[in-house]
Image 1 (cartoon, rainbow, N blue to C red):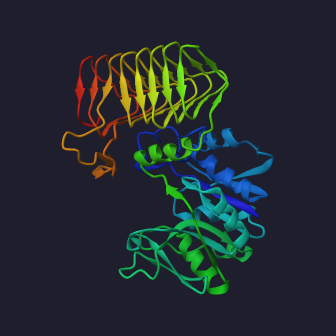
Image 2: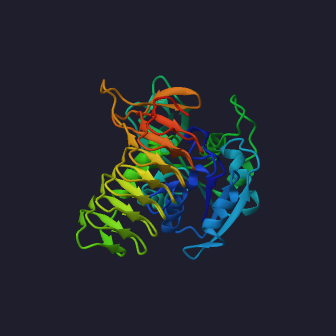
Image 3: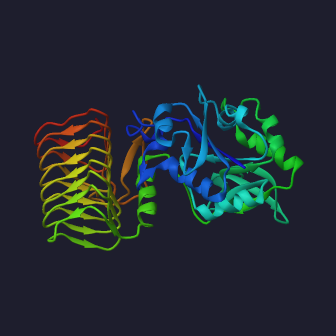
Length: 393
């Protein structure tokens, strides 16, 4: 069984984090988002991984190479992002025999992906409270009979989770006409498979579509929650590490630091002295948390620096971000309402009572900057010393 993993998109809704890094390659715990999907496929028994790439394709190729965990890896280039069927069709030269299609920007519980492989032809679904907001599976006697898009009267509560195990013949059905929104949809291929085969629904125990910045934060909360304590780096004897904390070899935890897990401190990162790190926090490779800094429930991407006497909460900092000393992030509205954030020009609710800032690669703040909840700083953006920033920049 080959696994076709879709990783060609930029991720416009997750900007500015995707300005130079494709969304599937953004960090989730100790690896890129798409690597969790590939690992699930490998664990399920995939004989080969075919990664469909496009935006910043070399970033994906450089990470996975020609083999990943001793499984061969091939690449198919989707030059234009024109829908999911179009993406799978880009891998046509690699399709021999049955194949699985997985989204590289989704998180799946690995056991359910193994069930998907075993049940082929099959489709993954997730139980939802409001199925009329999704494509919904109709089933009869344990067989999928249809997928209905956003039905007013849903036949089930099983939402299509976008993971499919196809028979070999499906490779001949990938050249589907564009839909009303101008994309070549994989659901049209699924409709043909349902007509010709008995398709099994596989219910995911856990699933997540990572499309917007706060969902990347939630993805890290999920995967960091799976950590098991391991201390391989240099930890000063006066530091206090509580719970599931991982300090990778080559990382440094300095005197007086307090860390409350789940926290992952990756190789080359440095924390302290006298810093406080808590919540589900990722301090990625080469990142720096300075003297008397507090970081809570956040992601610091590779090379990010939070200088002394700063606070960062419920935030995502891109690569090589530099927060000047005394930079403080506000992550809670005075009215206690959900924090809102700008996605593709529209201000939308994050659904989170606490959410701080999203900062693009290379942005810098002046000392004593104050950043409002739900703020977006684009790649390379700057603030002045002592400035209060309440609008996206």
